[in-house]
Amino acid sequence: MKSVSCATYEGVNAKVVDVESTLTKGLPSFSIVGMASTAITESKERVKSALLSNDFSFPPKRITFSLAPSELAKSGSQFDLSIALLILVNNEASDFKDWFVFGELGLDGQVKENIQLYPLVLSLANQSLISKAIVPFESLDKLSKIPNVSFYGVRTLNEAVDVLKNQDTAEPSVVNSGINYPFYEIDDEKYYYMKEYDEDFIDVKGQEVAKRAALISATGFHNIIFEGSPGCGKSMIANRMRYILPPLNIAEMLDLAKLQVLDGKEPEFKPHRNMQSVHHTSTSASVFGGGSFKAKIGEVGLSHNGILFFDELPHFSKAVLESLREPMQDSKIRISRVNSKVEYPSSFLFIGAMNPCPCGNLLDQQKECRCSDVEIQRYKNRLSEPFLDRIDLNIVMQNVNASDTSTLSSKEMHKMVVESHIFAKQRDQKSFNAKLNDKEIEKFCVLDVDAKITLDMAISKYSLSFRSVKKVQKVARTIADLQKSEIINKTHILEALSYRKR
Image 1 (cartoon, helix red, strand yellow):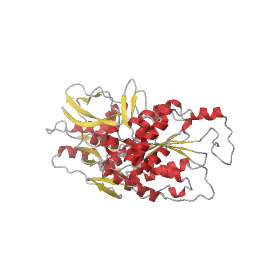
Image 2 (cartoon, helix red, strand yellow):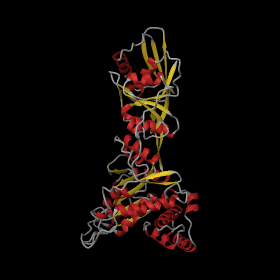
Image 3 (cartoon, one colour):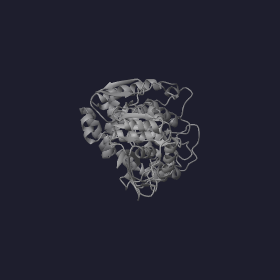
């Protein structure tokens, strides 16, 4: 019996699959067992054709392949190459168990790329389960960016056979995998960023309070809601926040590329955090992920380490808004189905945009609001208090005036975010300020005497919940970072309190 390793998905994580083969005497047959999908069972015909097209003989034996563990459902065309190789090297004395083999076979024996291969291998690497792998040559450019794995790129079945038969002398493929973006290094960790701003804050006229709040939100990853009349710049600001977010380390960049593949996109390997804009007609399954037999990732999971943007916030269904509370609080999303239970990381910056009333003119100084008090109240009641309690910054925007001018550009704001990020990392803080737990708040959010007195007065006056108090402290920590202050003082607390929901 011979075996090599391959992998399949369970949620967004990869699970190792041992591909085992036996060739025994008996009536010629070819069977694959172990909960294999149609794509895998169809590989029998591709493998036969690939062998016969390359002057290999197909053994007239009883051929059985087992994909273990047998209770795990397997899918994908990446099993083709491992199946074909095990038939060809079955008589070899060497052991191939430490080798991972991935690749789809053409009928002529060409090894083809599979777009799902990158997130599969990255997940294995993150779990320290893979050290060397035979992969399609076309995939090397993407895969070579994954550290600590030796990749052997092959174009044909013949080349793959040569690698396995000469595994002691075979050399890994050499591909330039450098990341050519600006970076800075803190404690041997590199943080990459870009100086390209496709949408610039210099285009936003006026709205100084909203831009200040956007800067604080981007720096500390604080959830934020913009409220204002149609056309005042809510979506405009939200779309520009992506370009001023903190830099990414190599692990975050690789995870981002993985999510892009799962979203059906070509991975870019750029240090730009992702942004998922969700339409208010989206179903719960599309937002949070789901499926009867295989739980697929949704918009919340795809926004991990990036932005989740909900425009026209009150028009989302109550079920979606209330379900959003868990990932906003715990930074993960759990999907439970009869056939599967999956957990995805979902540490995102939530941005919401909404009108002040159904017609949108409540705050407009020129237009008359056509809504009754009942309609306005019903509109605002679509956002529950527990949901709003998870929002750090609430911003009411005014209409733009002809005299309003541009002030800060995205380049200037991004520079402030980067400097604050370095300031936080130098005090050995691992998480963004908005994601600090209780112990980290106690350690990093140190208040001076006046700030403590001010916060205590606010707790008494506004009846702040425990969660609200922690959020005020974390927002104040970000404001202090922007001013390079180790200690949170009274002015930081007062500004943080000014952004709370009234």
